[in-house]
Structures are given as C-alpha cells and as structure tokens.
Image 1 (tube, helix red, strand yellow):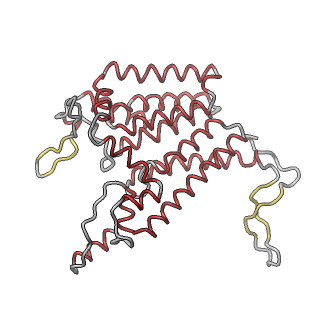
Image 2: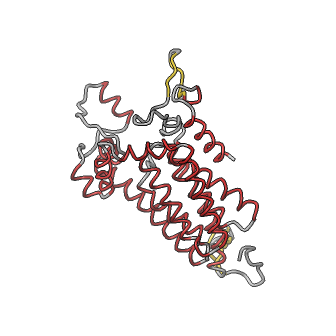
Image 3: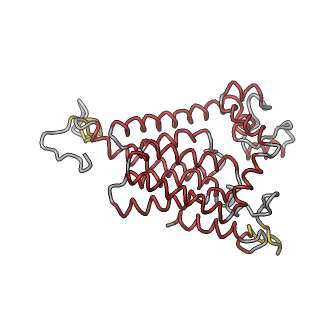
Length: 330
C-alpha cells in the first residue's frame, strides 16, 4: 500500500507544474521552497527525489526489486498479485526521478530478478514482463518529458566524472586519486571542537561517501567500513547460493541484487537508503531462515546443555530428533 501511494504521488508531482503546492519542499520564513527542476524540460524532480526529503531514488531502486521477488516467490495467489502489481507500479515511476543512475540500476535489478526467477520460461512470468513493459512505456508515452530529462542528464558535463567515480569503490584507486588527511579530521562533533579551539582542519571537501570516509576517519576508518561492506556483500551472495539450492529462485535474485548495490548506495550517510536496504535484507534473512530446515533437515537450533554445565541450556546446532515434524515449507 505504501509503495503504491509513493508511486502514484510521484506521478501527480511530476505532472503538476513545478510551482504547484504539491511540489513545495517546505516553507521557510513565509517563502515556499520549491522542487528542483530538470533544466531542459522544466519538469519538477519530484519533491522526494533527494534523500534529505524522503529518498525517492532510494525507493525506486530497492523496493520494486524486493516486491517483485516477493511476488514471484509467494505461493499465496492474492499476495503474489498484490506484490507483483505494486512492484510494476513502483517501477513505472522510475523515469519520474530525473536521475541517471537510479533509472539504470533500478531496471538492471528488476531484470536480474526476472531472469533468476525464470521469467521467460513460465506463463505467469511472461505476462508479468509484458505488463511491466507496457506500464513503463505508458508512463513514457503520457509523460515523454520524463525520459527526455534522463537523456539530458546523461548528456550533462558531469556524467563522465560520475562514471569515473565508480572506480573509487576499489581502495587502491580511492587512496590514490582522492584528497584526504591520512588520519582524518574526525566526524561532525570533533570538527566543531577543532573550529572552536582553532585547530587547522585543511581545505578538504567531498560529496561522495568514500571521500567523506577518508576525510573524517582517515585511511584506517575507511578500510574498516570498506571491509564491513564486503562482509555484507559476501553474506548476501552466500544467501543467494543457498536459495538456489533450495530452488527459491526469486529470493536468490533479490539476495544477489542487494549484494550488487552494497557499494552503490550510501549505507552510512544516507539514513533513508540505510533503512530501506536493511529492511530488504530483513526480508531476505527471513526467507533464509525458512529454507534452512529444508537444506539442513538434520541440523536445527535447539537448546542443548553445555558439556560440564549444571544443566543450563544454550542454543546450539543439534541433530534433528526422531519424530520431529518437518518444516511446513519443506
């Protein structure tokens, strides 16, 4: 329901003039702060495009992919219909963002999940694909400025710079090309005290997350967070592998898709991306807990008394006892 409301409201905002009340960000000192415009078309970038409002681009990258995986993997017909329809509705709002990367990445994730779930090999899959293509093209037909705005963004002067910034995902390149103090200048509160006591901070500036890691935390802090993200990515990839073994292809696609975007979004500085990402990861973990008894029927988490203890039970893996009823999804 929430996803449908977000998608429909995005269409309303995009269709309205940029000076409309629906495109008002806020009112400051009695003056309306209006949405940004795509310069070539004059259309408003919906008021939730940027993460400091409600993170529309975060939403259209992560949520349609998650909903599609739920819809394709759900056995209940009603839930499957609702999740798939909402996923397609949310995906159709992709062009409204006026942003380059979310449009490309969002479609890529949907295609990956569709392929993983065997879209082309099932009747339902082919129908969903057809309806999805028609939905996106209908939006483009009704609002041709939406796709034109994205094209113009690709032709912008900063596109090449943005693509080159992708390589800074790799630590050797980031450490070689970015400007930063080796040990960092500290986070916000520490910077405030540096200014209060007149401690030199240097003239460092970065819009990207990697650069901000290096400026605030230095090389050690940056490498720590980079390693933590690698750990999250590996965990998701391993979850995808387990889903394939359990023949949960849609869930495998979702796990793989979320693994890919571990380094795409800002898990530290964008609280909206952080919230949506780990919400999706929670759904993936729930599905993994469901398939675990199927993959390992002889190993369950059960209270077992530790050797040499006085009888106090601890959670350990233990062989499944004879006569235990199999998992309902097994």
